[in-house]
Length: 240
Image (cartoon, rainbow, N blue to C red; front, side):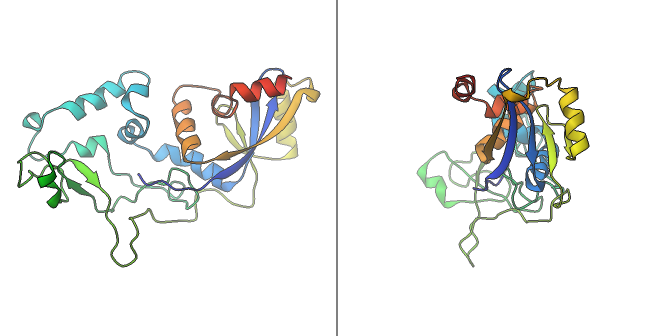
């Protein structure tokens, strides 16, 4: 999984009395990022968030594979394929502006052993390979640096998934729709907004850390934007 320093901008509309995000105004890049979360395999999600932070029992499955000795794994199998599965990116996930840019499926992967300093001399392209020095499995993934430009391999860019000449509405539960005056009026009615004087706009920036928080919250909550962007300090400020 490659990361970027890209930060995307969203404008939140907040009900300060109820301390909740009603919805956000978002452009193409934000919506492409949100839709790209659908590309992530379960193993990749657990790898990114950490098994102990996962709801349910899928984190235990991940930890079980991680802890399983290679003596119990079929010789033709590689547990790195479950722990860090390859992703076949869609146009949304390969958008250049995505905070959680996915690695292309054809990226070459390299591994080394971490048992001792003597093992650092060896690199392999298959994590089931035994280290020539200590004979343990070479499972620590390392980054390949391109000799022509000195750059770490990155995911390819694309044109994304949704149209750019549109503003989108992202509700607190991550329901995404194209924005219009009529849809906004309908949304206010649906959300039962009665006190418009309590509404405030707040511009927020969505980077890698916020992207991970959105991913985590999307698996646990129906109030994702509120959970991620309304900290206790901001709630106190709105109430004051």
